[in-house]
Length: 302
Image (cartoon, rainbow, N blue to C red; front, side, top):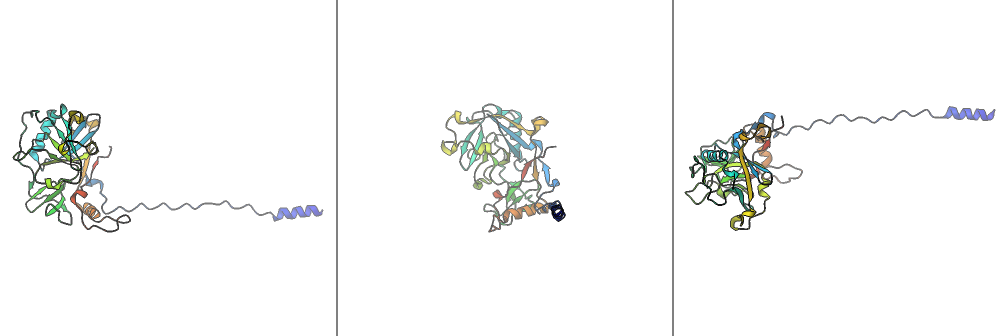
């Protein structure tokens, strides 16, 4: 009897089952606020297909150049005609790669005849009369009274009466002999080092590499004078040059520039002139135009 009572007491004294433990679900984190410099969808504008030149190199890989007809119209017209004539498709190459300076391509022999209709020495389109900048950097430019941006996404430098596209990394210029030569556009170069700004207003700038610059900047340096390759075997052959408008639509690369005529781009300029913490501790209070190149991107799919 006593044992039964003790067992009954043990049963009665057993603790009630513990309530299930639930882990609180945190509230969804708020989406980060957009920076004042963040572009809106309408800030991105398509670059016309006939302003994009695609250079295909032997072994694969392409270099896409946005052409600048507003700043060098005759030279750019020559380039379009040369592409249409397939002038670069046989015998042309990248024949010069000078460290911290340029990667240059065209006819290394300097003997290939130009197609009909090409202006051998266009006007010296080294600068552009008037000023079209809609946004400017805070501080004067070391090579010009001001530096800024065109509405359609070109970096500019200028004075009271003229403006020009500066020689920054990736800019494409027309190789030429000594003046009065201005270069036909058959031989071109891209800056692959610190912006060689001393060339401003001395050579026609006809474009900017917007995709594939690494296919020029990463090439072996030429061991000849001024970075020229000493032998044809060192040269990188060009297999084709086409305007994007000539490429089938399904294969055509498409790019967009960022408009500069809005407060978001003004905020972007401020962000380039004064880099923010936590990494940057001391703001610079200004920027070199070559370190604040206007953004260009591939167009989103669809």
